[in-house]
Amino acid sequence: MRQNILTGMFLLFAAILLAQHQDLQEKPKLWQSDSKLVIDTNSLLAAFKAGTVNGHFRYFLSSTDNTGTLTDYYANAVGGGLRYESAAFHGFSMGVSGFYIFDAGSSDLAKKDAASGQANRYEIGLFDVTDPENLNEINRVEEFFIKYRKAATRITFGRQLINTPFINLQDGRMRPTAVEGVWLETSVGMKHQFQGGWLYGIAPRGTSKWYSTAASIGIFPSGVNESGAKSDYAGNLETSGVALFNYQFKPGKGLTLNVWDVWVENVFNSALFQLDHEANKWSGKIYSGAQFIFQQKISNGGAEESSKSFTSNEKPVYTFGMRVGYKNKVWDHSLNFNRISESGRYLMPREWGRDPFFTFISRERNEGFGDLTAVVVKSTYTLKQRTSLQLAYGYFSLPDVKNYALNKYGLPTYTQMNIDFRHKFKGILNGFEGQILWVVKWNQGETYDTPKFIIHKVDMNLLNVVLNFRF
Image (cartoon, rainbow, N blue to C red; front, side, top):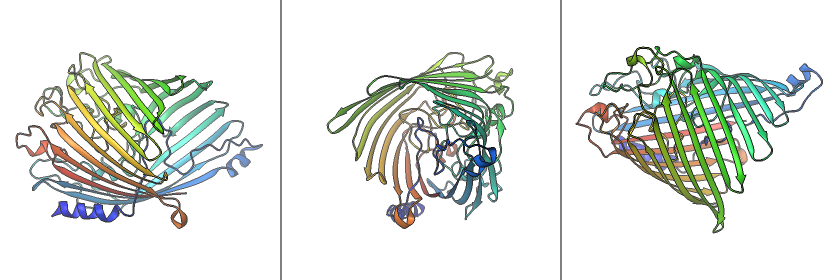
């Protein structure tokens, strides 16, 4: 019955709605303005008067239909916020933004499923995962920064939004992940670009507070350790912060090399190398990419007691990915592959962002696993750059759910299909954007008839309907 309701809602809304997607190499674009105002003024007062104000209102429906008698959930959230950024004064500007969220009708998101003992996974992220009892008047100061620009260089200090392969917006709920620290962006000519910084604070999506980098790890469900006991690193890690660095090199037409490194003091280091190529062909572009990630533990993995550390990998972990595709003004088709080595778990705090893999598709991740192979086909149809429809289908081969050393979250091998419809309105509704996302996941592995290996993971439907208005 509930599956029929979900399907009916999908067909009904598919004729009318939309939202926004952020690629990991894009700058954050959550607000109508992307902060390009750099007019220098003669006085500080004039700089503040010449600033820009932007607003963002958002409605989000999320509904999860789990198989059989496992608990189903739904949530309706509404919210809004304002952002102000001053004009430049001798190269300096400042900005601040905040957002509030209210419940517009939801099931009991604090109620755990009786058969599995598991808590809600998706819907609670619209509010505050740290306080599932409170669904109203959730607010957060999201940005509060000072910025300096000169020529091709920009330095931002304070609370801000960034989008990188390892720490990113992951804008799949009401509000994204924000960071606090210092961030530098610069370029040398047209071929060389650099960015990076030091971060000491994180406000994960689905939360209302700011945390130190150490305290932010473990706010989301943390799975099990290598012996199968519940992970115990939340609140027990020691790290002073996170250093990120990126070098982008464009040696020739259509060729781009990206090198990223994230160093979490006392915990781990991950380095990413990605080569992308595009070539004009058949009235469009043929594109391809290769990605390699190398990850290793630093010091004691975050805690002197191994049972409380974030990572216990004694050997480096590798991931390798490839993609090939074709796109033109209307179509974009791609075949994507990713492999995680058997030497340990690939680990990144889920509070900080989504996976950078070519095989990533919304509402599931491959972080926390080793010995994983994924193959994903994506196809997108775009009409007049306002309406798009994407179909993504993937097969994800994972270790057995009881192989705790390589399967942190008890997720069996699965297949997943996403249908993602987006539309930007014009005319009288200019400023509105909508999205309908329908996710279906099927089990392809052994679950031992254990509900905790099934609920919110496989044999389920998820429907999201999102409406944004930006000015």
